[in-house]
Image 1 (spheres, rainbow, N blue to C red):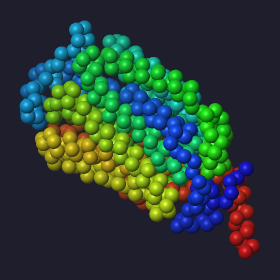
Image 2 (image 1 turned 60 degrees about the vertical axis):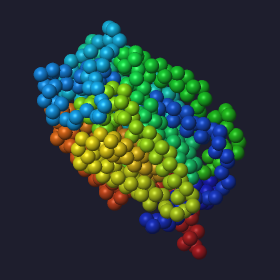
Image 3 (image 1 turned 90 degrees about the vertical axis):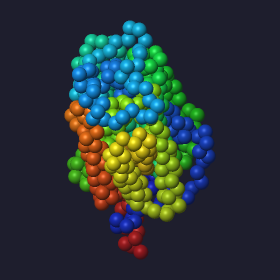
Image 4 (image 1 turned 180 degrees about the vertical axis):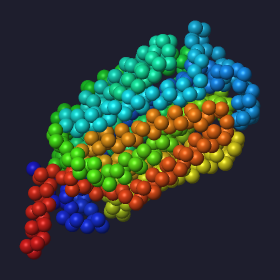
Length: 511
């Protein structure tokens, strides 16, 4: 049955004006601590920690796998002269550290490394939309769990694929991306059924921030494991962790609060009541034409593409920059490469809580909140990326600015990256599949472009990388500020909501 008037933010507004949004009821909220919905968010957080560990492990392991980011010894002298001097007190061992006996090394040039780092995203592109569609219809538990489990199992084969050659490794990484592509759309499909409107920002930001935390943990851990045990151990450990997580996921998670075995009646009723009719599967049919013509959806798509260009550039190439330009040893490289993601993780959590508080207290509308967090989360990182260029070879300033760039980028976790569930909760998984498909294009292109720009491993080449990333990021901030919205779109309404909206209009006319 439809919820009482005003109790769900997903309800259709009786006033069609752009200046108004549906009011949120003030029903008593069940305790959050140890609740089923926050336990789900925590388990999802751990899942995306594993997901990003599986995704970024190659970025650091690559330094160990080739034992030099420029395998041509005749060019080493000119490369060092064209980059920064090593940090003070540093022994230049980044290209000469010892691996355990019998660990292989490969002569892959900068261009090959760029293709290998981008290979994951070729497969990742293919399953976003189908995964979102199926998760929205059937529920996201199976697809998220299988996506992580499949990627983890394939990761175990990485040393074998590398031994067979770069083409085999490229194919394996693309296949891993194919499996992992369903994870984020499935997450959004689950939250469409589980997340009360007043808690959307914090629940989705909390679970999705596992990506940043995963990068923070995986980068230094990968460097340490590579140096102590050899780079193949990285992929065995990461793959094993993913398989272990999947066991807990399939045991404890349910697609819907109605079918959860350990949820309290109070919490179940609260979620069902506040989510309303939007918390159901969307069936087989979709309003595809309305979606394709929705400039609100296109604002999300373009903004995410802009934001992801800078994010994926740093995610895949930062360890190489730390090694070739700044000359940090492998352990320092991996720790400093991870530091920005700690800030991003903390900021994502904070932004989710702040956004929900602003909406709950009606300080700003949902639209204004999403725009504020998106603008701050895209524009400030651009400023700090430009600052990296002008920092020259000051190692401390460079690390500080890179950390601030990714930290401030965490604000967007409560902005454009959860906006699909605002404009069309019922189709949120499918829409995230669409936006993530477009948003993954930078993941394919950015590492390749970075490889071409930095072929000679010079400061000038990396300056181009940061200028392009900063410019694209800032463009996304402007686009979303002009065209973004947090309003439920007319094409996303259920039949119940359309009937309810019609009854409200008739009553208002009769009065």
